[in-house]
Length: 558
Image (tube, rainbow, N blue to C red; front, top):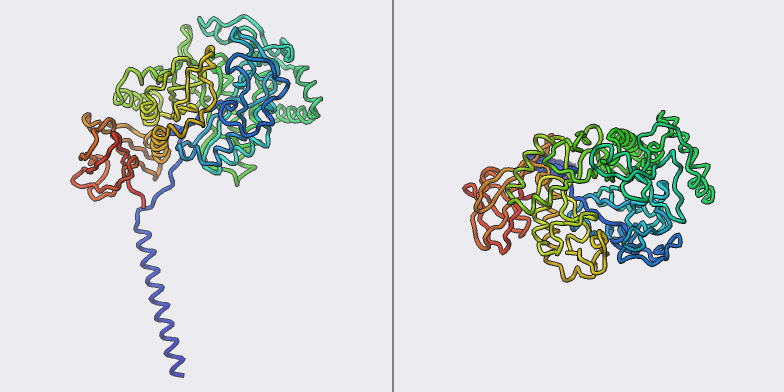
């Protein structure tokens, strides 16, 4: 009996000790500062822009489709890149290593089947901006199953997906691609861009039929689409979906609303996260307000129907291409005779065509300070998309790839969303012999050169990952700490989340002491993300010895 009582007492004592130890552990855990999950912020995103046909060939069986076999000008035909190729790189971690958290692909909808000569040799719609059918994916690029796999793979990695929306025009007319009816499109006059009307109610160039986006008149489906859908065995399904859309929304069966319905299907069917919108200033401003409303509703429907695929509560994102818009214009784009605010109830962000000029003419501090001021005042609650290289800008910041390291530093550390153009990180050649016009900007991704570009790639990766991990870099408030050495801080807060970093550029190499007292308290353990060194703040400073001329200081996470 005594033995049993003794055993029971020992058991209770052990249990009591374990309980007290667990309580002590819980108390200590609760007293630790909690690390909140880094929120995704579009205004601070690393957005990788790629031409779907030029990035990576994942399926060589679809390289030739629709009889596209004519000889073309240099880099003016399809080269083999496709959705499967992009998915392969997502799954391999290429984008994750680069710090990319959003991908924008050139349009993937079915393009005209024929070629057209614009004076540069035969050209096919490899770039995606010559639509034949908005309801399906171009066979050269893949199919709907491929798109589903791509979006799912991206979302598993925490990467958002943007498609490219074209509502302004169809593709050119060829022998294989008849012009759409006159109640759908106009074939003249050609735009002269002298005022608002001569930029909107006209064709961009010769033989690029302009959708009558101003019309509210009901129109029937183009006979070409009816014939095509019947041959493909999906006419009844497409018509039923259109009937349901127009009944539910009450919109007239006008040309723009057909296209908006077709584009919104990529949201409800695949869960894409946003649209980059083409040729915005060539279409009436209210069209984009309508499109934003339709996209928002489609995104809400997708989230309701697919709760297990919802990444977070971030809204649908729309960024517009208002050609020649610059951040210094604030919210108004000036046509000469009229100013238009494209942000109003439409775009979250506009592409900033001014960024490359600022980068060439201003110091880091001049550009950072100016952008910080505008984004926190005139453009507060909106965003800009900065770029230094793109697919249709014949005057890039670094055409000869002589400033590839500066390109990364300038782009990824500037306030605003950063658009990395495919191959920026590997100094892809932008001066391809034999090309005419923008074709030289659209060469194939130079995967075979990556092994010789490791120093450059690592620079992009370090900056990209730091920016992805710290929304303060792109969306935070900028403050210069010292001019020599050049040090600045960025600070971002939203709700209970707070993020602070200190960055130094063009620093002398070797051992040096850096002032960080305006951001980090004495005793704080910090890390230089660029070199990987862990440091302690003492007397408001950190001492670091590095061979790099850049430091990226963050609070150490345990």
